[in-house]
Image 1 (cartoon, rainbow, N blue to C red):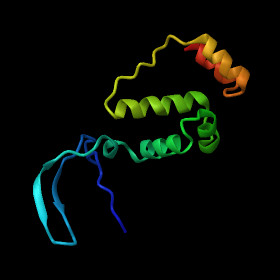
Image 2: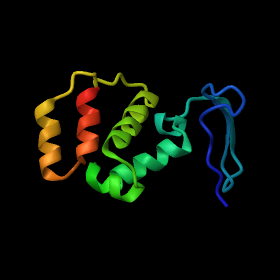
Image 3: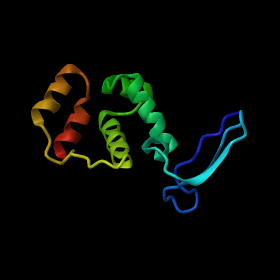
Image 4: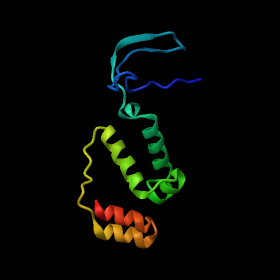
Length: 120
């Protein structure tokens, strides 16, 4: 069974460094201080969300269906992943009312979700 390298300390949640890598084929071992990729630092929940997001080609309606969550929850999960990858989120409380109304009319979001987004 393959074991995945964890990216965060289970005690304090800070980023971890890899200090040793080994090749089972030729028995080579390399020691040093190696950084993990950004995706290794995501939580398992965030990695699962990214996988679902990619599988559904970013189609939020399909992501909602697969995960059984609302549009605002999908947006929040996406914002969390963006932050975890080290990027500034450009999402602000200035909502685009026209975009929300278009999503409502196309059935991408419910009336309740539209009201919640407009209140943000």
